Image (cartoon, rainbow, N blue to C red; front, side, top):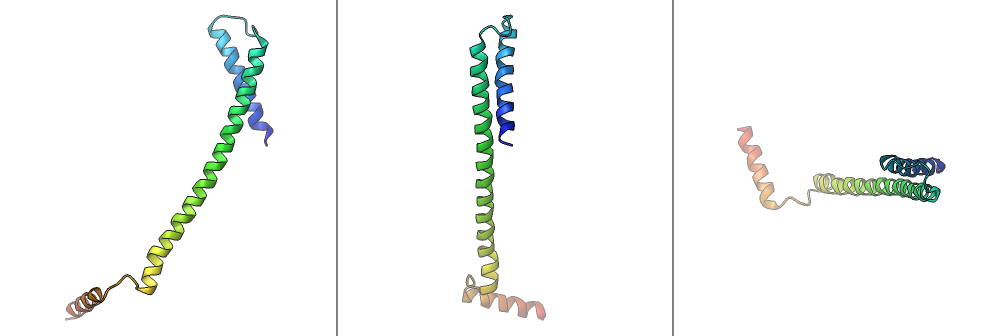
Length: 102
């Protein structure tokens, strides 16, 4: 699997250099060292892109896990423990229940 991004990057660099020569109406292989340089830069670019994508997926998983834990603590924790309800709110709830029953 690690060879795939390298090969794709090398082909991308080679293709870019050949396309550049074709646009300028020069021979495709005018300076071979430019093709080697383009292949190397393309391989490095695609490998870094793959590393960045993996890091981004890991960071997203961490953020989603933190958000899930925060939501569980915020909603499930307050519903079960009733720590966020004051005595005034309890009186209002009792009044609302009594008023709806009559």
